[in-house]
Length: 195
Image (cartoon, rainbow, N blue to C red; front, side, top):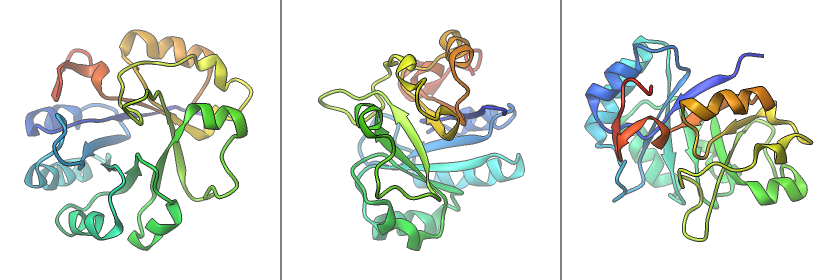
């Protein structure tokens, strides 16, 4: 199985142009208001066109935002996938008629796997968390914790960068690796050499 590549946190068109020239599967943009990586709706619209022309799926990242708010984004931006990064109930978002990536808490996943209310049509992302953030910490976690589970069905995020992705792939073969801060020279600005 080939592990997919998702690069995330794009907000500048020149970075998106460059990323679209690479062999990636997904390009993520953050639609949570007032974050350092929040994308402008016009940039996101252009990005969706660029990515479609390069066979790259666009992912919109949302955090505890309702169906109505996400629908408004979808009216302007033709996203391929919705990523829910908060405490959302997946079933509430089926009406959007888009594939869903749902962030799950590593400790909860280790305790019980994917919960009974999990959705078989949903993809799941494991990310590192802390007391203030539900992912997006830029810190990796101990991937050995996933060995007894099914990492091939997961997106793995959390502190990934070019030098540790190889270590991860020697240990497990996830569905996809998801990198954001690990390809930046400063928050919201991508480093082309690292990409």
